[in-house]
View 1 (cartoon, rainbow, N blue to C red):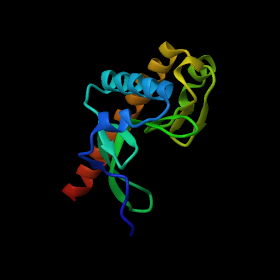
View 2 (view 1 turned 45 degrees about the vertical axis):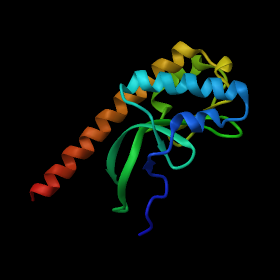
View 3 (view 1 turned 90 degrees about the horizontal axis):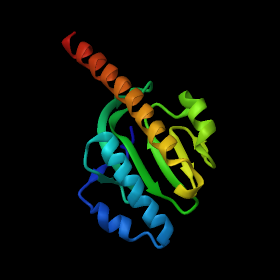
View 4 (view 1 turned 120 degrees about the vertical axis):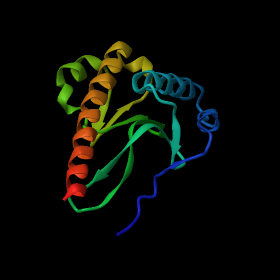
Length: 150
């Protein structure tokens, strides 16, 4: 089974953020990192070369593949700022309708810049997704603990 390439590492989050060439995207990235820091109450770490991640959890997929992944994260991609969350965003259709310009991927929320969205709504979306993600991660941990006891 192949090993997940994107892992937490000791690279500098500040160095990564400072390397973002576009001034507005860099400023927005710093703002998103601070939002996620407050929401998760954890310090950011680099995951791979381009994802700033917060907290982590252990997972076992349906295929049996397992590993560790970030609970929340962001990256400044060329096309958009990307927010990564466990549990997806689709559970919050009402909030998404109030968010502003965005698009969704599987577990990802894409925005061009923070000026395009309602920031208080974004903060609520992050909080709701984290709450759901923590419940799912805790359930997975309990399930693993029960299987270990057998």
